[in-house]
Length: 315
Image 1 (cartoon, rainbow, N blue to C red):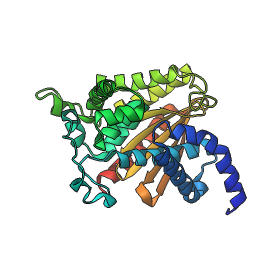
Image 2: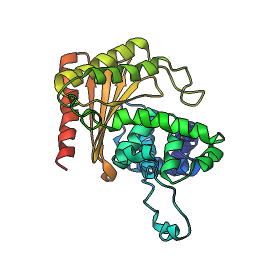
Image 3: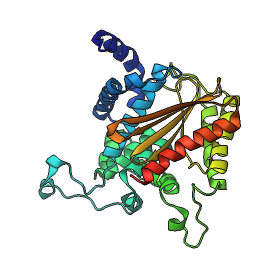
């Protein structure tokens, strides 16, 4: 409502967890920018806060998107200079591209950033991003306080993991059966969902910043597993990216450029808050689904997600 003092209080309260969480994924300067962008977005989106969702969860979703955009920006190809770096190659000799990184040269920045954010540890993200910025192993090792040999080990291990995400089966293994996320529920998809949810069971209380971050209940995780697999198997919803929420819930995300879709599952109430936002225009669609009648709820959720998917395809 334009109350500057109230907004300041919100910032002071939530910066306590936003800063340490964001710095897990971004360098200090980029982390500050991401947080600032999140609060700017909040100014435009605050009126869309749904009564069934906590403010903290709402802000956390905005911050996740802000961090993802920052990672996407950082995950540039080594041959792309910044605007103010034109001519820099006249005084600097770039190292030859690492053959392992040819894999990343084939993917879009959005795909690379999403994979780094969801699949890799902070150290692995740092090694890949610094490599993409043309830093040699010795420079990266000095920046991260490790050895050049360890940098090479971490990079190789990370590339192996990213390959599974970024390279479709038909590209990496010629002649093998390709699995389409939109048409089949493969064993790989099932394993991906189960392995990701298993990580949530292993979380410790305070996983977010040492003080906050509830652990999702095992019963709730089992429920989400059934819901996600049912959406994929019966309604052809694509494989989502899965995250724990600070309140002990689970959030699923899908990216259908230029749309980002999320489903925040409340494991206690057995409900889901569906949210879709279109790029930087901030066009938004929301829906809340109760799973008291599970069949109807699955259909409503699938219809919401697939409708946005089609809008992305036709954009």
